[in-house]
Each structure stands twice: as C-alpha cells, then as structure tokens.
Length: 432
Image (cartoon, rainbow, N blue to C red; front, side, top):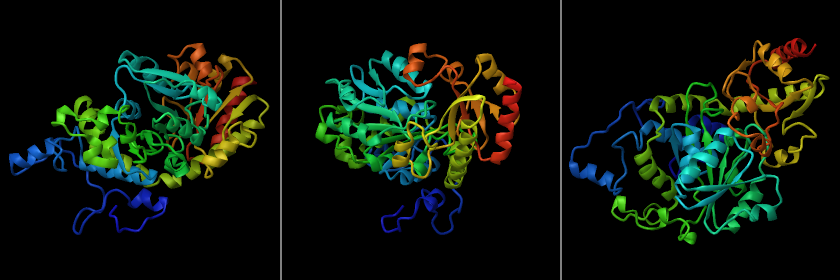
C-alpha cells in the first residue's frame, strides 16, 4: 500500500491489500501468465540483473501476480517484505537456508509437522546444517543449553501440526535474541487472522499457503514474510550472506543496498535464482481469492471445531480430546494470550479402542473424508502416526507429541450438526 493510504483493519486488508489498480486497470488481480518480460534496451535489462533497478525479467525470480499476493500476506502479518514459494516446505527451507550454510546449526522445536521434521533432521543435515530439537514446553535453561557458537536461527510452529502445541512466542523470541539469532515461526494453522507472531517478537514468518490461506485445497504454495526487525548488521559475523559482498552480484552487500528488505531480496535473487521453487501465477491468483474470505472462514472453522471438541470430550467412547480453545486443555492459557480470536479448525482425539477400531471409525465416516490434507473448507481426517508422520521412529513420534492413537480432525465450514452426526454414526459402527 502507498505510504499515505489509511491503515485498514485486517478484515479489509484480506480483500483490498496487495493489488492496487490504477485508473482503467482490471479491478480483479490479473494473472500474468508469462515467463518473460520485454525491455527496449539491453542496458535496461542489464541493470535488472545487476540489482541496480527494480522490475521483472523472468518469472522464476519474480512475477507481478505473485508479488501482489505476497504484498497482501505481508500486510496481514505486519511485515516489511514477503515472497511466495511453490510449497510450504520450500518456504521453510528457504527461510532457513537463506542464513545457514554447511557447518551451521539451528534450534528447532521438536513438535512440528512430520515433513518439516524430516526436512530438518535428515535432508538439511546431508547439506551440512545440523538441527537440535527441543521440547517447546521445556524451561528456558534447557532451551538455552541447545545453542552453540555456530547457531544461526530458531524455528518453531505457532500451533504444531499435529501435536497442537501452542508456542510461547515471547519465550522463544527472548531466548533467540539473547543468542543474537532470529526466531522463525511457521504461522500456518492460526493464520494472521488469529495470531500475528511479529507482535510477540518473532522475526520471520512462514506459511504453507496450501492450507487456510488458500482454503479450498486448490493450490500448493508457501510464503515467507520478514518483519524487518532483526538487525543483521549487529551480528554481521553470523550472517555473512547478508552482510558481506556477494560476488555473484559483483559485490552487492544486501543489508547495505536493501536495508530492511535484505532478507527477502537475498532469498529471491539468490535462492529463487538458483533453486527455483516459484509459485505459479495461476496458483497465486487462486490463493488471492481464498485470502479474500479468510477472515470469514477462520471464524467458522474455530466455532465448528470448538463445538465438536466439546461434543467429543463428553462422549463415552472417546478417551481424550486436545484442542487449545477447550477449557482445561493444557495450552488453554497460552491460547488465550496468543490466540484470543480462537486457534484454528484442527483438533485431535483418541478413542477407547485399538488401532483396528480407530481405522474402522475413519473408514465409516461419510461426510468427513480421509485425505492427506488439513485446513480447508471441507472437513477431513487423518491418522498422523501411520500417514503424515509415518517416516518418524517411535521415539521421534513421542518427542513430537504424536500419540499412536492420535486422530487429526480438520474441521471445515459445513453445518456443525451434520459433522457431529457423521462422527456419531461412525463411532457407533466402529465401537458398538
């Protein structure tokens, strides 16, 4: 948005932020489905490649459709710069790899999505970057003990998928900053509607836009947003990629040339240049349509999820229920602090039966589908230990807060009575 434009409330930003058409231009965000962009002179093109001018020349690096949607997400989070990626996995990888290289180390909450855990524990390790996983509920002394001389970042999820751990953002930000490193937070589950991590001290936010931001299970994507608050130059020795000359751009120092935009500019001009993982403009267009109703959907998701959590808690065939908004939940106090509008539409529970009974329950659901997804308009269910987190060992599952009987239910925006009736009939067939 322009500097003299009024600061609107977040519901209005969902619809109006990002793309700002001029007189005579399309009212709806256009899809710029082009790989390349024309210039009248070689000199003009050369300045783009030298980072001496702003503009578009190849969609692998930047595209106008993508940048308008990234600007909207940036505004929703309260950041200074943002970029889209092809997936949430790519967003988390880029956010970390932008400041880490072989020989570096980072601290990560142990309760994260299974794919993220595998990325950090195995794939990134093969690149020479080591992770130390720590229980997010550990006391500060135990978390401080995880840091090393070569630690470059701390990573965690606002609400862990699928453990539903609510992160004490202020605690982790305080610890990260005491060691001169940024806190990177994956804010996929609550979205900026229900939580804005920058307001609690986080430095960088990532998203799997595939989930609530898109909201309709149409497009895989990711996003990275920088708060602009972390002082890279203060810890210049830790972050040479940002604070020393980049020879691939004839000695450009990103913090000197781009200031608060240094982190995203480097991720775009170096990582996206070399590794790709750009989001397709058509996907960005669909993502933008989803964001326009985000504020409406999140309210319904959380309302429905709380109603189902209360129903399950009082059901004689249900062994346990975990939902942060539920009174008595171990994370209820943190949820009230960081998520006053509600947490998200995802809850977990276990049944008073064996694995065969759990599978029978899931197989008998008619309205709620078994799919490898979460956080969209349609309700769905999954058994993480044998599905999304299957690659993890028993010890890793335990450390990640994933019980063997844990059922992850992503509550959609259907009529909640229809959802409860579907759960009821499936329970009766599975256990009775």
